[in-house]
Length: 94
Figure (cartoon, one colour):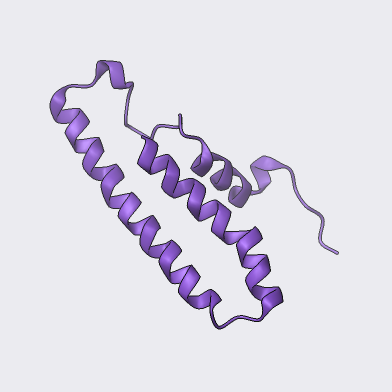
């Protein structure tokens, strides 16, 4: 069996944690209290684009799940779906 490596050696774990952290700003975003209206509108558009993509990814995952075995579908429900849902919620909240 393959050994599970700690955080820094696991970009998938790092990405899942980052994706679920509502307070996590994107690289280059800056502090909201220092944002100009133009800056705020720019980042709103970026978050809107990414949220739309995450919602499409989730819809596609759910579509693909309909053809999976019960066991396969359950594993996707436990692993893939929560990560995508958390990422979408992060972008919705930001």
